[in-house]
Image 1 (cartoon, one colour):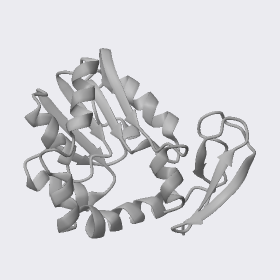
Image 2 (cartoon, helix red, strand yellow; image 1 turned 90 degrees about the horizontal axis):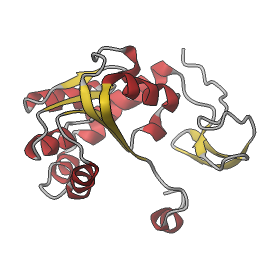
Image 3 (cartoon, helix red, strand yellow; image 1 turned 45 degrees about the horizontal axis):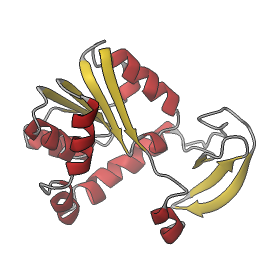
Image 4 (cartoon, one colour; image 1 turned 60 degrees about the vertical axis):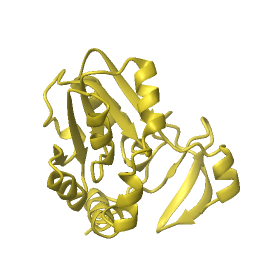
Length: 198
């Protein structure tokens, strides 16, 4: 049976936070010390796995979502950023979903691409396209040490019970001079201000 766990702030480890709102069965709070917004309590691992398996079946592999994700211009901004940052060689996409960024990175000249996600249906879809998408926990160590030049976590860290463990795992997987690229929501952005809890 799933048990919810109380948690300290994933960034600064503070133990006090202000409740903000409730959405999709989760309570969102803001850390009193550093201002990070996060979910507290965090759902147990089996509940998270079931949630992302359902999302993999019902959302990520939805025909319209796939059309948007695999559109040729979808990752133009991310790829331009990676070029400016000097990213090259072997890329790992953590939270790869159906593999749309893997496909874009292959097209942009990365020598190899590997995706990791806990959502089995999403990974199965990516593999059906010939992409290397591996179902599992990135922190479990199934990728070799120094096997990547770039690790990307696009809109991934905010979904994790222990984001620091994923950053540490990226450090293990990256070779010397490797690059970790991350995007997370900004709770003070214009889109957040306009959309609120939507």
